[in-house]
Length: 113
Image (cartoon, rainbow, N blue to C red):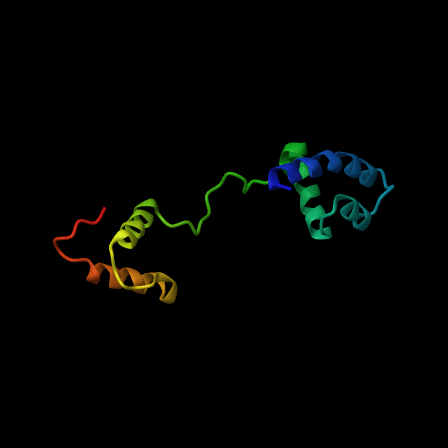
């Protein structure tokens, strides 16, 4: 199940489970089990639910770019160097070393797309 669909299922169930928890009919452990999440996750969900309601349960990571994502210009540079005919296997060496070797291997008059 996709993360967004799973989020929606948890949001639908959380309202009922949270109501049972606040009325004292469920403990934290039981509520977490019913939702299929860890106890610490249930605590975090409760903490976000109080000020923001069901909207606070939406996963904030969805739609955000990874902090580890390479810049576009660097990605394009790597792709263009890979298109150049060289005898180096990128899987056998680190990316940094591959780029250094590829730039040396590219002939000065050769056009890199």
